[in-house]
Image (tube, rainbow, N blue to C red; front, side):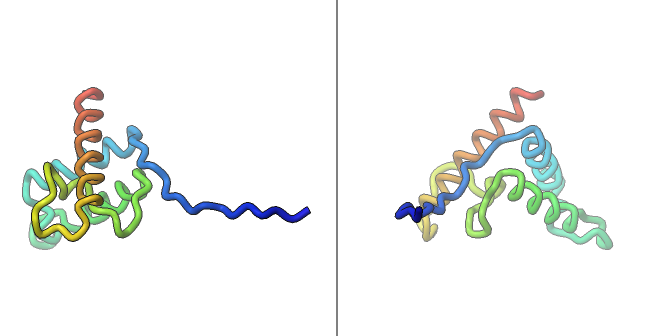
Length: 104
């Protein structure tokens, strides 16, 4: 018998896992050394950083249009087109920092 129900395509909520925490820590470590700006042949870690960010997006279940929790901190700036996405990324960043602190 046919149904009249229609599936609702809701994006999944970000899930903070030990893998996501480790990837977040690794990305912050690369940023702390400012190695994300230079390719490996120039003494940096840009390829590794891009790979870690990609894996972090996947681990958190983020969409391509979501802002990175690595780049958003605090209140959204005046120039931000979508402050809602900024706040979501900033909340996720705070949750990752808190989770990383709890896990040593």
